[in-house]
Length: 163
Ligand SMILES: CC(C)(COP(=O)(O)OP(=O)(O)OC[C@H]1O[C@@H](n2cnc3c(N)ncnc32)[C@H](O)[C@@H]1OP(=O)(O)O)[C@@H](O)C(=O)NCCC(=O)NCCS
Image 1 (cartoon, rainbow, N blue to C red):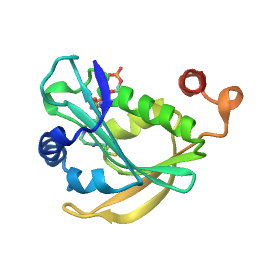
Image 2 (image 1 turned 45 degrees about the vertical axis):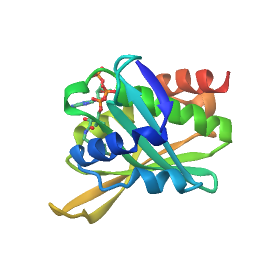
Image 3 (image 1 turned 90 degrees about the vertical axis):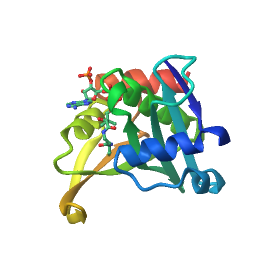
Image 4 (image 1 turned 135 degrees about the vertical axis):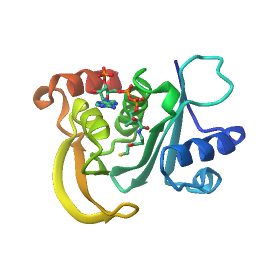
């Protein structure tokens, strides 16, 4: 597996992958935004195109996860988990305090995935999503917790990230 930041040559592949995963994002525009961070993951080191991506926007001392997607063929291989770990390493390096996101209330795959990393479910935002209309759940992870009060998976990541 290989994780890297988005390269200019990968924007078309990521636009296609994002579309496949149900996101309307323009990777070219994201590359030009100083506050956007976009990582890509490949199942194998030598794969020509990325299999997964994570887009986060930085606002002050927070990362807001805008999109996270893995191609259907590459799911359940740990790519999203590795991308989240990489994003958390970056958040620690930048001294950020929290990570936020919204997920569709029915998206148990995503909710499970984030809970594994210590994210907690917060407010429900009624009819936050369209096509189809659905509630959104807010999730957040406080990063100033560190190791002592963090649940085990997060504690492991905190210590890894802080090394
Ligand atoms: C959600 C998504 C990003 C997960 O990507 P992935 O690369 O398959 O995830 P990983 O292999 O890293 O999974 C890590 C853990 O997340 C949880 N998880 C992932 N997919 C799951 C599923 N379909 N059902 C339940 N739990 C799931 C599991 O706990 C999994 O660990 P395990 O495989 O050891 O059981 C992927 O299914 C996807 O792209 N979905 C469409 C887009 C989307 O919903 N994005 C999230 C928006 S907030």
